[in-house]
Length: 91
Length: 369
Image (tube, rainbow over all chains, first blue to last red; front, side, top):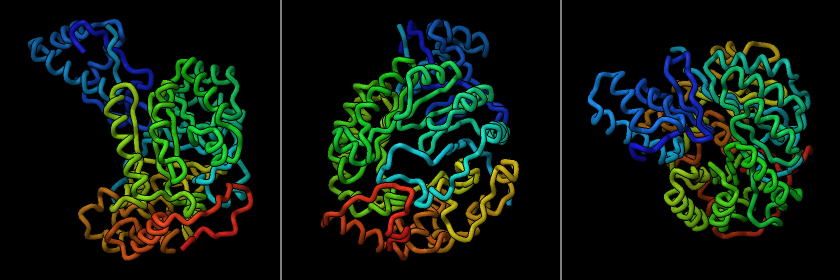
């Protein structure tokens, strides 16, 4: 996963808004993750079109944080999700 | 007591009918008695009520769910409700066009069971020639763009071939591989002497699975489920009674686990008679083992009581006759000797024959000890 990767959700994973917790969930076979708002913001942008770099830019603007700090977080989150087979990087 | 947590998963057992006769089937021995299946309208209502309670995952299972001709309607409604829907199937009675239709309707995942990697051994366990057919169907699943879960139930006769199961899963492009050791309830308890592995077999298989998990990280999720009989501590069966799961039997009973209705002395309500929400929130069956007040010692004062919830109620009943006993799998249980005896018998490896799942319950009763 690098700044030029174009991440997308794995075929088995699907985002769903959960009324009970007012959070997004990432659902996949037999499991689900309740996402904090930042994680949901990242995964909603994993459409196979945007690059990691552009996701970072969008979120830095949205949250008013410095891009390098946002990039570190986004990258480490996406790598974790990729290791779990929930996000795939198409370059 | 505070209001129960929401359920996350609805397990819809659409039918007990199945072309296979697996010797470790976890359905009740007397499943033939549950012959009145819910109609489509009731299932559709149950899906809506479940979603309203908080359910986000739907497992369409059985028996063999494909024998129901209303799966299309159920999948469509589940998608409308934004449920993540998983079809759990033997694959046998499936046509490619029907599977393609499921995809259009929004089915999310297909799980196929493979009994073994050696066709003759697979067919022996399933009681039907089915192996080649299953591989063909797994191929369709991937061709049509579904994620594929492969599930293999492990036992004495196939544990040595876990490496081959992993290789088969890779070849089929599975996204998730469940290497699930048989648990000794239902038909597997009847066949325990033939199925329970030795500790050596299990340790070798676990090591193979762990290596595969590392190697396939990010590509295939590899799950290895230990048989309770070789765990020193019980598992959190169903993540705790009435905490996350609702199982609906083919004839409409709403249960905290799929064998709960085999426990004597408990009443479970039918979705034909009460709304699912009322059953979840306020019924004798779902309340029976919620929380900690029902727990005996050594559970009641145990540090792990909120981790394993006392283990499996069905196993406790099957082995001790008391559904409220500590799961005998626990080394602290006064009945733990029953588990040790079964392990010793497995180590000796006396030959035993298989009893196939059939409408007539086997002569051996369900309380094997």
